[in-house]
Image 1 (cartoon, rainbow, N blue to C red):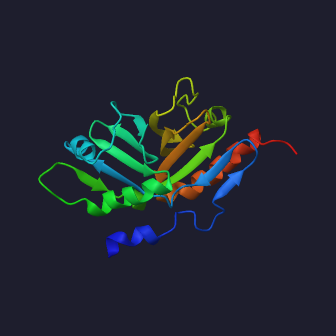
Image 2: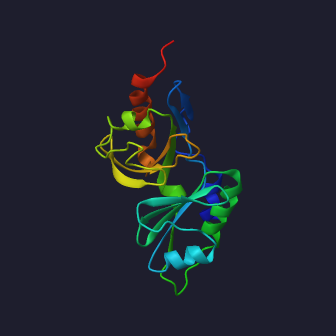
Image 3: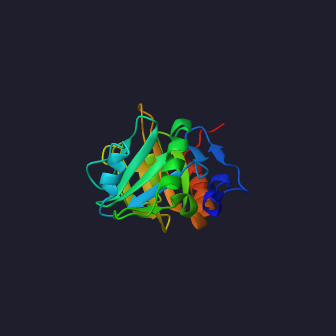
Amino acid sequence: MMQNMHVLAAGPLDDKNTSFDNGRVVLSDFSPLARVGFRGRHATWYLQDRDYVLPDQPNQARWQSDGSLVARLSQTEYLLLAASTQSRSRIQQEELQWQMSELSCFSLPRQDTHGWLRLKGEVLPEMMSKLCAVNLDTLQFTAGAVVQTSVARANAMVINASQNGETEFWLLMDNSLAAYFWDVLCDASTEFAIAD
């Protein structure tokens, strides 16, 4: 029963408004959505056997037919993110059904360790250039790209989750830093707000 407790828990931003929109940047707390990681020599085989279509290279992400996203963080580590209602139960089941076996594939409970924030808006690359040394211009940081870097002096993973011409970045960070990132991103976006 204890291993299932995180399914009932809210995100790390319980005391904050979980949506922010200044007309040009939309920030949402995706932390309550399901996510899980898998790592090990056999992680690729394990996920392919479960019908996931995986990115070919590390630091890439690939959308799945159910609306989930699989990010390949290294040759042997993956992160599964449930970005739709349809994919939520599938990702939760992946975590619950995993069992220790002779395979070198280990479950990583990312729901318990990582906060997840979504940013939307055409000005994101310019806004993020003030917080991050990595070039996140959408010509360089294309849809499906993943970077693990420092954002506002703290470690974070940034995924370009853009689809259908809408610029969208996902930031994943240690749960203990989620409120910090929320405040930093809200503050950084004020420069780009639509004037009344």
